[in-house]
Length: 68
Image (cartoon, rainbow, N blue to C red; front, side):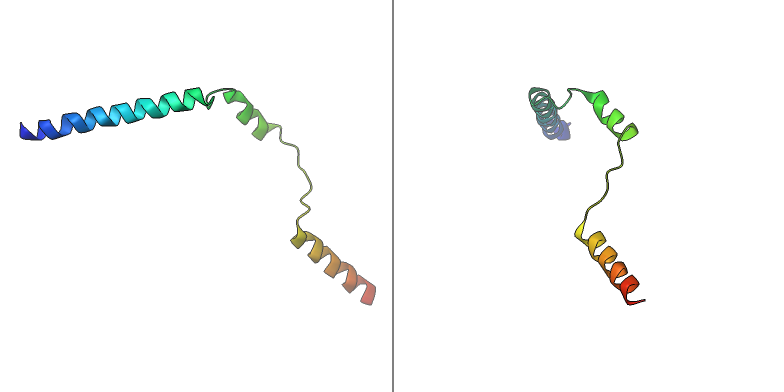
């Protein structure tokens, strides 16, 4: 019985925190346009990766071909 005096306030605080987080998410429009993320995965166009590492590897291959 004495443990309820501790558990009930903890549960109330937990619920208040959860409701606060939910209201923050709604206020900041976290739940707007939920379908777009799914479409982005399905219809994502492959874009070339122009990372410096790729360029250095291709330059190294070009130099090797010039030497041959």
